[in-house]
Length: 302
Image (cartoon, rainbow, N blue to C red; front, side):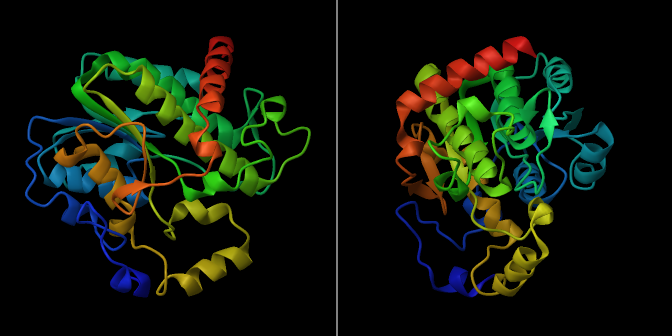
């Protein structure tokens, strides 16, 4: 627990910066519920999965390989379906959709992601962070919507990094990065896409189903492995002062996926287990609609 966790108060929900995933699910019985979570094998994805299982939920754990999902989750649950899902590869994502066919889903937690790649990398002609963080999840979530329960929830892992994207928020003319690339703004673009996808999806879902985006907080996990050594060192120094622990970082997405108080909350940006305010670009529904349209075109070609 950081110093900031100790001094920052709770919000209207009764939870806050220092709340953990176990605390926000205390007393909940999730027996009979099924949650699919990407990136289940490490960091806050693993902690979210562990706590949902602790409360009785069945897990569909998606990782790059079935073995990674099994090795990570089997120590604390046998109510598990491990699934291989490499988000940068459409064929893998579509195979994952087929693998969970027939499962009714109470929640889809789009947790996996990559961050701040130092050099431009491409997948199928698109910048890798955009492809992995947004397009891969776009394919997965839209491919599973028919399997959501009547009150099913979609939780997209965004970030406050969405406030620092490329110029204009989403540069549709440079999704391959060939007109200029910088790791951090392109990461911000992908996280803005996650937020806008959740906003637009919330409009399209039937009444009773919800979609929200989450800022987990700043946590020093494997996600930051691509950051420059000086930035990584700075995070290590900041850790005891302001960074969240993994249980704290997992709290908001776990709360969003499972807490009964959010039954009617949809189309929101959530942080510290409360509704938060995003950037103006993160509230631009015209941009959200265009992103959905462009994403459909991209997916149709893949």
